[in-house]
Amino acid sequence: MNRAFFVFLLIASCFLPTISYAQSASDIQAQIDTNKQQLDALEAEIAAFQKELNVLGSKKNTLQSTISSLTISQKQLAAQIKVTQNKIASANLQIRELSLSIGDKEASITANQDAIAKALRSIAQDEHLSLIEDLISSHTLGEAWQSIDQVMLFSRALGDDIANLRTARTELATNRDAVTTAKAKLVSLQRDLTLQKRSVDASKVAQQKLLSDTKNQESNYQKLIAQKQAAEKAFEQELLNLQGQLNLIVHPNLLPKVGSGVLDWPFSNAFMFNCTARKSVFGNLFCISQFFGNTPFSTANSQVYNGHGHNAIDIAAPIGTPIYASLDGTVLATGNTDLVRGCYSFGKWVMIVHGNGLSTLYSHLSTIDVTKGQQVSTKQLIGLSGMTGYATGPHLHFGVYATEGTQIMTLKQFRGATVGCANATMPVATLDAYLNPLSYL
Image (cartoon, rainbow, N blue to C red; front, side, top):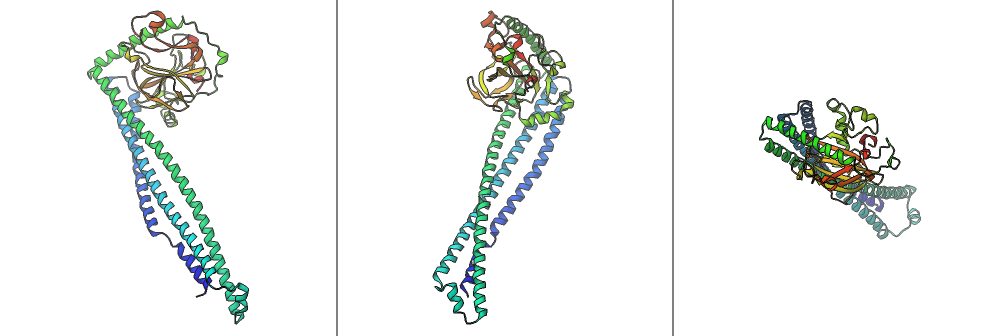
């Protein structure tokens, strides 16, 4: 057999398909498709739970409706955990599939390199005649043209082999990048799973505490609500008296421009997107259950707080919902007013100071994930939502303050109070330091 034709067959034999990889890839894809079907069913289940929660949210606040909401929220979280576990399984399958492909490409590259090496060795070790000498020694013109054709065939085969080698290397690099992306997604999903499991725990603790406090009696629940409302009213009056005596000056010109959008919503994008589908429940696109100031007019006006209105916005969120920093900053302080008996106010809270004259407050949390003095970045997890402090339902009390008009203290420190929240540490501000969060979101 002529050397060029032999070498061509040798090279061509290196490109046989890898049967075992194809079969494995097919099996893996079948598992991914099965996971996708399960995922669709779970998403439908989660949507059904949300409809139930929407209906309960429109009913009168009773012990039964509150317990039912907590129970359904736990079921919804359980379904979300299954979704995340499903996605983790699919990501692992994808990584496995890509890894098999990488092994196939590496084997192909090795085979191509070996084929090229063998071809070059064959040329060097076979005949020592040059092409011209080979042509001159041919007995007929037909033999001469056959030699030329075979040399050209060999050259094309070698060129194709080199091109295939380059293609395999490009695909190998692409697949390795895909694995890196899949692994990063896997890490993110693992974080989500950890958060979701914590959320279930927080919801169960709140439910158990509520049942314990009320002894599962509706009358006891309504008494507890009335007690909280009376204590909150007394606290607000005490706080109002203090605010009027603080010698802190706020310079409006040092604050960001109203409508500048310098703050992010303290929730995930997915949570805020779901709020748009619940407009019929809250009458707005942001799950706001109570606006800033005295009336809904505050949504369109910057500063309407006059000492008697709501000094923040309340955003309805199931217990255990992740809460994120609205902007880069430093944690000024954290606290828990529930540690003071009879003090129904912020519950567990976090205040962050930003470098633009604003500070943000996140309260009624179930857990706190940051510490005083810690540097945080925008959208960094700072805790989970809850219903600690004065809260008759799970929500986030989100406040925005002018930093220079705000202090962290107890009422006792300033006025020598001895009742209510006297010994509870919390943010206190002058009246003009309370800002409408919607002015900056």
